[in-house]
Length: 82
Image 1: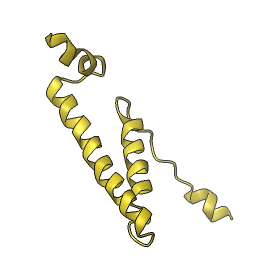
Image 2 (image 1 turned 90 degrees about the horizontal axis):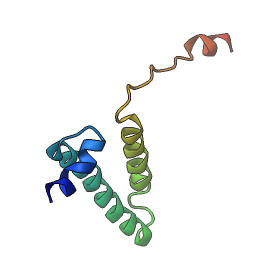
Image 3 (image 1 turned 30 degrees about the horizontal axis):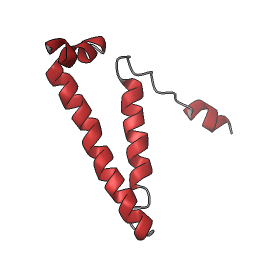
């Protein structure tokens, strides 16, 4: 029975507690953004970018999990040439 709770967290290199915290750190912002989207549907002037900003932020976090972040690309020399 314990295997049901630990198999997936172990597959992603986390303990049950770490996985719980990570899942909640994604889930709570998604719930809040979802509520903001519902309000936005009724009041289009409210929360204009809340949902899309949440999705972008969470996608960036998810994409970066388990792998080192790539070095930032600098276009400063290129910009100066223009």
